Image (cartoon, rainbow, N blue to C red):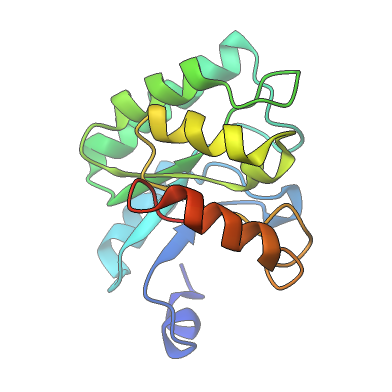
Length: 164
């Protein structure tokens, strides 16, 4: 939350709130989210990720994600960020759909789990079917600059159906 002012001075118009960046970002505490709601002057989306590592979640971890999305919706955050994969490298469409439904009116973003998919074109269609509103991706590369060719393809494919 302290970095909020620095981000705004740097030109940010939206912030992703998460804990433990060293793990790639995990769900922040409800206390942190409440503080952000009191202090933030720009919209922020909250990461829903029970642990670092891969994006293959156990039933217990997934139940925790559903509970977190519901709690965040009740708190009134503007949006949530999550991503679930299957072991074969495809989006877990069933879980993505259920989490998106649980989010209700919140903005929903798929995080960089997308960059771990084996077929980004099919993954994008899966997210569209799941009613996800936007995708955070670097074009399956370390940086968005390196991933520009795929990003351009994804933007064309997405059209007006989802924001890349």
